[in-house]
Amino acid sequence: MNKKEIKILLVDDEPDILEIVGYNLSNEGYQVITAKNGIEAVKKAKKERPQLIILDVMMPEMDGIEACEALRKLPELSATLITFLTARGEDYSQVAGFDAGADDYITKPIKPKVLVSKVKALLRRLKPTGENQSLIKIGNLIINREEYKIELNNQEIILPRKEFELLYLLASKPGKVFKREDILNRVWGNEVIVGGRTIDVHIRKLREKIGDNAFKTVKGVGYKFVE
Image (cartoon, rainbow, N blue to C red):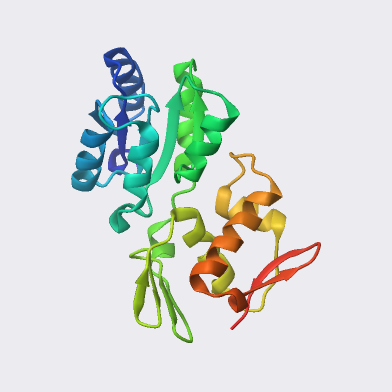
């Protein structure tokens, strides 16, 4: 996918941010769509289906955390990357952002060139089209990578993007033990620094939704999917 095909939804209640950041991203060749609050962002995201959404946290009507949670509930946006761009750099704000389903968290102020570099790094996580056309069937579990859908016992399950990516990775080779470092690199990418506990939390959530026996912990190494 080339830059001209990539849509970026920029959401902020400050006109100056929309103008400056929007200009720099447009200048790089991306299609930039803007919104002034969370409610408008959700509406435009449904219509435009951007590859990346950049959200401010503090906004009127619906803040960034609420908007991120709402966006992550939309199956058609499961493959969309979401990052926060905010002046709030406290640890608890970042944790809240990641818990809401964000892929990254960028703090202001930031130089335009650095922001563009971070955006490029984020977009590298988008999977090539050919990789999205995979269908995995294991027993009563069906994973449709192209549509980002999960079916278990004929019931659709909606997973946050990282949980989906983690499940897809492990289920792509049942029985194979994926090392923790490999999981971090392939699911989260080298651009985001996350701890090993992040994997543990996501595995726990998957066990609750898919089944405890579907995943096995290999102590000191990593995890594997059990058929």
